[in-house]
Length: 280
Image 1 (cartoon, helix red, strand yellow):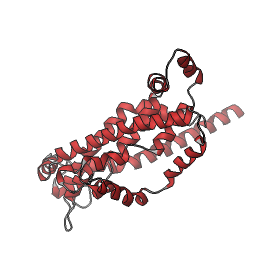
Image 2 (image 1 turned 45 degrees about the vertical axis):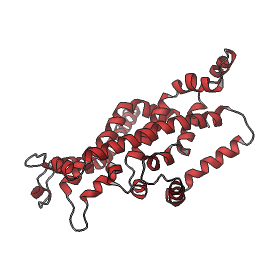
Image 3 (image 1 turned 90 degrees about the horizontal axis):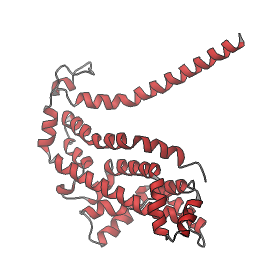
Image 4 (image 1 turned 180 degrees about the vertical axis):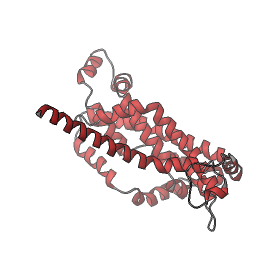
């Protein structure tokens, strides 16, 4: 009898847990589903009351209006180029810094790492003006360099990769050193191939953050030719009227690369999150 009661209690608690998780997932997905369905609605149906989820008539006019109102294709290419360049740059710089902090012995290493880590607690708005002044003195404002260079290094990425590098057995490196390998060869031919889950995690975080960034692009970009997708979406927000249909269509298009990147690297992303914090 006690076994049945215990089993029933575990089943009930598990069912309650699933109910909470699925409810939270539905609440999280609701705004995204609303955005997608609204992008296919006619303008009159968008403002109908009471509001309806499912469009009475599916139309692609909002997508056509979005691409005709602004050079959305150009914005899309700019965002993809900037996000890809920053992601590749962080994978290189963070890998080298993380390897130095995880494996190389030098004076003040741990103290320097904690100082480096402390920069994560500084709000980005505090460093925005100094970064802008440095780029302005270098003549990089309103260029791709202003969008790319400040993001080529990351304290978070270094910390994430360092934690993962610490889980890799040192015996592999020692064997490579005995075969005559140097530090760089060990890093790129042994450590990096074994760290694909952590690298995929960093790539996803970086790509999503840069692709969705609005504030920094707004500060350093003036010409419309360099607008990113997030700046381009502001075209549909006017002082007196917002083109909600076009805005929803543009938002759906802007979300597609994020979903694609996550879908491709999902397995490595979950594995990297699980393994990167195993060892201090």
